[in-house]
Image 1 (tube, rainbow, N blue to C red):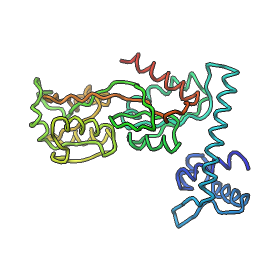
Image 2: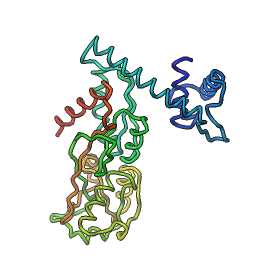
Image 3: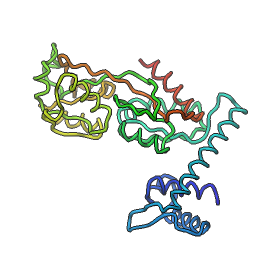
Image 4: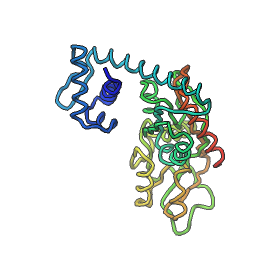
Length: 303
Protein backbone atom coordinates (compact mmCIF):
# COMPACT_ATOMS: atom_id res chain seq x y z
CA UNK A 1 0.00 0.00 0.00
CA UNK A 2 1.54 3.32 -1.06
CA UNK A 3 1.74 6.26 1.28
CA UNK A 4 -0.26 8.38 -1.16
CA UNK A 5 -3.19 5.96 -1.16
CA UNK A 6 -3.33 6.24 2.60
CA UNK A 7 -3.34 10.03 2.28
CA UNK A 8 -6.20 9.80 -0.22
CA UNK A 9 -8.21 7.66 2.17
CA UNK A 10 -7.53 10.06 5.07
CA UNK A 11 -8.73 13.00 2.96
CA UNK A 12 -11.95 11.21 1.98
CA UNK A 13 -12.53 10.11 5.60
CA UNK A 14 -11.93 13.64 6.86
CA UNK A 15 -14.26 15.36 4.40
CA UNK A 16 -16.63 12.44 3.73
CA UNK A 17 -16.49 13.68 0.16
CA UNK A 18 -14.57 12.46 -2.90
CA UNK A 19 -14.81 15.92 -4.45
CA UNK A 20 -13.33 17.76 -1.45
CA UNK A 21 -10.61 15.12 -1.08
CA UNK A 22 -9.64 15.62 -4.72
CA UNK A 23 -9.51 19.40 -4.22
CA UNK A 24 -7.34 19.07 -1.12
CA UNK A 25 -4.85 16.74 -2.84
CA UNK A 26 -4.92 18.50 -6.26
CA UNK A 27 -5.90 15.32 -8.11
CA UNK A 28 -8.97 14.36 -10.13
CA UNK A 29 -12.03 12.78 -8.55
CA UNK A 30 -11.64 9.62 -10.69
CA UNK A 31 -8.09 9.28 -9.31
CA UNK A 32 -9.46 9.44 -5.76
CA UNK A 33 -12.07 6.80 -6.60
CA UNK A 34 -9.36 4.56 -8.13
CA UNK A 35 -7.16 4.73 -5.02
CA UNK A 36 -10.09 3.93 -2.71
CA UNK A 37 -11.10 0.94 -4.87
CA UNK A 38 -7.53 -0.37 -4.77
CA UNK A 39 -7.43 -0.06 -0.98
CA UNK A 40 -10.73 -1.90 -0.66
CA UNK A 41 -9.41 -4.63 -2.97
CA UNK A 42 -6.21 -4.86 -0.92
CA UNK A 43 -8.13 -5.36 2.34
CA UNK A 44 -10.94 -7.39 0.82
CA UNK A 45 -13.74 -5.30 2.34
CA UNK A 46 -15.61 -2.06 1.93
CA UNK A 47 -14.11 1.00 3.62
CA UNK A 48 -16.79 3.46 2.56
CA UNK A 49 -20.51 3.32 2.00
CA UNK A 50 -21.76 5.43 -0.89
CA UNK A 51 -25.36 6.61 -0.69
CA UNK A 52 -25.94 8.89 -3.64
CA UNK A 53 -23.74 11.94 -3.08
CA UNK A 54 -23.15 11.04 0.57
CA UNK A 55 -20.22 9.02 1.93
CA UNK A 56 -19.92 7.24 5.29
CA UNK A 57 -17.16 5.15 6.86
CA UNK A 58 -17.80 1.46 7.42
CA UNK A 59 -16.49 -0.22 10.58
CA UNK A 60 -13.41 -1.28 8.60
CA UNK A 61 -13.03 2.28 7.36
CA UNK A 62 -13.11 3.69 10.87
CA UNK A 63 -10.47 1.19 11.94
CA UNK A 64 -8.23 2.11 9.00
CA UNK A 65 -8.75 5.82 9.70
CA UNK A 66 -7.59 5.37 13.30
CA UNK A 67 -4.46 3.50 12.26
CA UNK A 68 -3.75 5.90 9.37
CA UNK A 69 -3.79 8.84 11.78
CA UNK A 70 -1.38 7.03 14.10
CA UNK A 71 0.93 6.22 11.18
CA UNK A 72 0.88 9.85 9.99
CA UNK A 73 1.64 11.14 13.50
CA UNK A 74 4.49 8.67 13.91
CA UNK A 75 5.94 9.59 10.52
CA UNK A 76 5.78 13.30 11.38
CA UNK A 77 7.48 12.65 14.72
CA UNK A 78 10.25 10.72 12.96
CA UNK A 79 10.74 13.55 10.46
CA UNK A 80 10.98 16.07 13.31
CA UNK A 81 13.54 13.99 15.20
CA UNK A 82 15.71 13.34 12.14
CA UNK A 83 15.58 17.00 11.21
CA UNK A 84 16.63 17.97 14.73
CA UNK A 85 19.73 15.79 14.40
CA UNK A 86 20.64 17.54 11.14
CA UNK A 87 19.64 21.11 12.03
CA UNK A 88 18.25 21.96 15.51
CA UNK A 89 16.79 25.28 14.28
CA UNK A 90 15.04 24.07 11.12
CA UNK A 91 11.45 22.88 10.68
CA UNK A 92 9.82 20.91 7.89
CA UNK A 93 6.77 18.88 7.00
CA UNK A 94 3.05 19.55 7.05
CA UNK A 95 1.62 22.17 9.41
CA UNK A 96 -2.18 22.40 9.60
CA UNK A 97 -3.23 25.68 11.17
CA UNK A 98 -6.77 26.77 11.98
CA UNK A 99 -7.89 30.23 13.03
CA UNK A 100 -11.10 31.97 13.95
CA UNK A 101 -12.33 34.53 11.47
CA UNK A 102 -10.80 37.73 12.84
CA UNK A 103 -7.38 36.12 13.21
CA UNK A 104 -7.58 34.44 9.81
CA UNK A 105 -8.57 37.64 7.99
CA UNK A 106 -6.69 40.39 9.80
CA UNK A 107 -3.85 39.02 11.93
CA UNK A 108 -2.17 35.86 10.64
CA UNK A 109 -1.91 36.66 6.89
CA UNK A 110 0.71 39.30 7.66
CA UNK A 111 2.83 36.73 9.50
CA UNK A 112 2.75 33.92 6.95
CA UNK A 113 5.08 35.26 4.18
CA UNK A 114 8.01 35.92 6.52
CA UNK A 115 7.59 32.52 8.17
CA UNK A 116 7.53 30.79 4.76
CA UNK A 117 10.69 32.63 3.76
CA UNK A 118 12.44 31.48 6.94
CA UNK A 119 11.11 27.90 6.84
CA UNK A 120 10.58 27.00 3.15
CA UNK A 121 10.30 23.27 3.90
CA UNK A 122 7.13 23.67 5.97
CA UNK A 123 3.93 22.94 4.02
CA UNK A 124 1.40 25.36 5.52
CA UNK A 125 -2.38 25.23 5.37
CA UNK A 126 -4.72 27.62 7.19
CA UNK A 127 -8.38 26.75 7.82
CA UNK A 128 -10.91 29.44 8.70
CA UNK A 129 -13.74 28.66 11.15
CA UNK A 130 -15.25 30.12 14.29
CA UNK A 131 -13.62 29.45 17.67
CA UNK A 132 -15.97 26.60 18.54
CA UNK A 133 -15.24 24.73 15.31
CA UNK A 134 -11.48 25.25 15.64
CA UNK A 135 -11.60 23.60 19.07
CA UNK A 136 -13.58 20.67 17.65
CA UNK A 137 -11.13 20.24 14.74
CA UNK A 138 -8.17 20.14 17.14
CA UNK A 139 -9.81 17.44 19.25
CA UNK A 140 -10.58 15.40 16.11
CA UNK A 141 -6.94 15.62 15.06
CA UNK A 142 -7.71 17.63 11.92
CA UNK A 143 -5.42 20.52 12.98
CA UNK A 144 -1.99 20.77 14.59
CA UNK A 145 -2.35 24.26 16.04
CA UNK A 146 -5.28 26.64 16.40
CA UNK A 147 -5.79 30.33 17.08
CA UNK A 148 -9.02 31.46 18.74
CA UNK A 149 -10.76 34.33 20.49
CA UNK A 150 -13.43 34.34 23.17
CA UNK A 151 -13.85 33.18 26.75
CA UNK A 152 -14.80 29.50 26.45
CA UNK A 153 -12.26 26.94 27.57
CA UNK A 154 -12.05 23.19 27.11
CA UNK A 155 -10.25 21.12 29.71
CA UNK A 156 -8.92 19.00 26.84
CA UNK A 157 -7.11 21.95 25.23
CA UNK A 158 -4.14 24.09 26.25
CA UNK A 159 -4.32 27.88 25.68
CA UNK A 160 -1.48 30.39 25.39
CA UNK A 161 -1.68 34.16 24.88
CA UNK A 162 -0.94 35.38 21.39
CA UNK A 163 -2.14 38.99 21.29
CA UNK A 164 -4.52 41.34 23.18
CA UNK A 165 -7.53 42.71 21.32
CA UNK A 166 -10.63 44.82 21.91
CA UNK A 167 -14.13 44.75 20.46
CA UNK A 168 -15.63 48.14 19.61
CA UNK A 169 -19.06 49.36 18.58
CA UNK A 170 -19.06 50.72 15.04
CA UNK A 171 -21.52 52.40 12.67
CA UNK A 172 -21.59 54.08 9.26
CA UNK A 173 -19.55 57.27 9.29
CA UNK A 174 -21.59 60.42 9.92
CA UNK A 175 -20.96 64.00 8.72
CA UNK A 176 -20.38 65.12 12.32
CA UNK A 177 -17.98 62.28 13.10
CA UNK A 178 -17.85 59.92 16.12
CA UNK A 179 -19.56 61.05 19.34
CA UNK A 180 -17.35 63.25 21.52
CA UNK A 181 -18.78 61.60 24.63
CA UNK A 182 -19.80 57.94 25.10
CA UNK A 183 -23.36 57.03 24.20
CA UNK A 184 -25.52 55.86 27.11
CA UNK A 185 -25.72 52.07 27.07
CA UNK A 186 -29.52 51.97 26.71
CA UNK A 187 -29.39 54.35 23.73
CA UNK A 188 -26.70 52.33 22.00
CA UNK A 189 -28.48 49.01 22.47
CA UNK A 190 -31.73 50.46 21.14
CA UNK A 191 -30.19 50.50 17.64
CA UNK A 192 -30.63 47.52 15.30
CA UNK A 193 -27.59 45.36 16.07
CA UNK A 194 -25.44 43.46 13.59
CA UNK A 195 -23.55 40.61 15.25
CA UNK A 196 -21.41 37.53 14.62
CA UNK A 197 -22.99 34.09 14.65
CA UNK A 198 -23.38 31.66 17.54
CA UNK A 199 -20.14 29.84 18.27
CA UNK A 200 -17.96 32.85 17.41
CA UNK A 201 -15.57 34.26 19.99
CA UNK A 202 -16.70 37.78 19.11
CA UNK A 203 -20.32 37.15 20.04
CA UNK A 204 -19.29 35.24 23.15
CA UNK A 205 -17.30 38.21 24.51
CA UNK A 206 -20.18 40.62 23.89
CA UNK A 207 -22.76 38.27 25.36
CA UNK A 208 -20.67 37.71 28.50
CA UNK A 209 -20.21 41.48 29.02
CA UNK A 210 -23.93 42.12 28.60
CA UNK A 211 -24.75 39.31 31.02
CA UNK A 212 -22.55 41.00 33.63
CA UNK A 213 -24.75 44.07 33.14
CA UNK A 214 -27.92 41.95 33.57
CA UNK A 215 -28.82 42.30 29.87
CA UNK A 216 -29.91 39.32 27.82
CA UNK A 217 -28.96 39.21 24.16
CA UNK A 218 -32.35 37.83 23.14
CA UNK A 219 -33.99 40.94 24.60
CA UNK A 220 -32.23 43.18 22.08
CA UNK A 221 -33.14 44.06 18.50
CA UNK A 222 -30.72 42.06 16.36
CA UNK A 223 -31.03 42.94 12.70
CA UNK A 224 -28.68 40.24 11.41
CA UNK A 225 -26.16 37.58 12.42
CA UNK A 226 -23.20 37.11 10.08
CA UNK A 227 -20.48 34.46 9.99
CA UNK A 228 -17.72 36.93 9.09
CA UNK A 229 -16.62 40.47 9.91
CA UNK A 230 -16.48 41.70 6.31
CA UNK A 231 -20.21 41.10 5.94
CA UNK A 232 -20.91 43.03 9.14
CA UNK A 233 -18.91 46.00 7.87
CA UNK A 234 -20.63 45.92 4.49
CA UNK A 235 -24.06 45.80 6.14
CA UNK A 236 -23.21 48.74 8.41
CA UNK A 237 -22.10 50.88 5.47
CA UNK A 238 -25.57 50.41 3.94
CA UNK A 239 -27.58 50.74 7.17
CA UNK A 240 -27.15 54.15 8.88
CA UNK A 241 -29.26 53.20 11.91
CA UNK A 242 -27.44 49.94 12.67
CA UNK A 243 -24.66 49.33 15.17
CA UNK A 244 -22.18 46.45 15.03
CA UNK A 245 -19.46 45.02 17.26
CA UNK A 246 -16.15 43.97 15.69
CA UNK A 247 -12.44 43.81 16.47
CA UNK A 248 -10.60 47.12 16.43
CA UNK A 249 -7.97 45.34 14.31
CA UNK A 250 -10.52 44.81 11.53
CA UNK A 251 -11.28 48.50 10.97
CA UNK A 252 -8.07 50.14 9.73
CA UNK A 253 -9.15 50.60 6.09
CA UNK A 254 -12.71 51.69 6.82
CA UNK A 255 -11.64 54.23 9.45
CA UNK A 256 -8.97 55.69 7.16
CA UNK A 257 -11.47 55.98 4.30
CA UNK A 258 -14.12 57.48 6.63
CA UNK A 259 -16.63 54.77 5.76
CA UNK A 260 -17.17 53.62 9.34
CA UNK A 261 -16.62 55.17 12.76
CA UNK A 262 -16.15 53.83 16.27
CA UNK A 263 -18.87 54.66 18.80
CA UNK A 264 -17.78 54.64 22.48
CA UNK A 265 -20.47 53.29 24.79
CA UNK A 266 -20.79 54.24 28.42
CA UNK A 267 -20.08 51.35 30.78
CA UNK A 268 -19.30 48.82 28.02
CA UNK A 269 -15.65 47.86 27.58
CA UNK A 270 -14.93 44.68 25.61
CA UNK A 271 -11.31 43.56 25.98
CA UNK A 272 -10.37 40.08 24.88
CA UNK A 273 -7.30 38.18 23.82
CA UNK A 274 -6.29 36.07 20.88
CA UNK A 275 -4.85 32.74 21.96
CA UNK A 276 -2.95 29.82 20.48
CA UNK A 277 -4.52 26.49 21.34
CA UNK A 278 -3.62 22.82 21.00
CA UNK A 279 -4.53 19.48 22.53
CA UNK A 280 -3.71 19.25 26.23
CA UNK A 281 -0.72 17.02 26.97
CA UNK A 282 0.22 16.69 23.29
CA UNK A 283 3.65 17.85 22.20
CA UNK A 284 3.46 20.30 19.34
CA UNK A 285 5.25 19.25 16.13
CA UNK A 286 8.48 21.16 15.56
CA UNK A 287 6.92 23.18 12.72
CA UNK A 288 4.05 24.23 15.01
CA UNK A 289 6.47 25.21 17.77
CA UNK A 290 8.46 27.32 15.33
CA UNK A 291 5.34 28.99 13.92
CA UNK A 292 3.92 29.85 17.34
CA UNK A 293 7.20 31.36 18.53
CA UNK A 294 7.61 33.29 15.27
CA UNK A 295 4.02 34.62 15.33
CA UNK A 296 4.33 35.75 18.96
CA UNK A 297 7.54 37.65 18.18
CA UNK A 298 6.21 39.26 15.02
CA UNK A 299 2.92 40.36 16.58
CA UNK A 300 4.58 41.64 19.74
CA UNK A 301 6.83 43.88 17.66
CA UNK A 302 3.78 45.26 15.81
CA UNK A 303 2.02 46.50 18.96
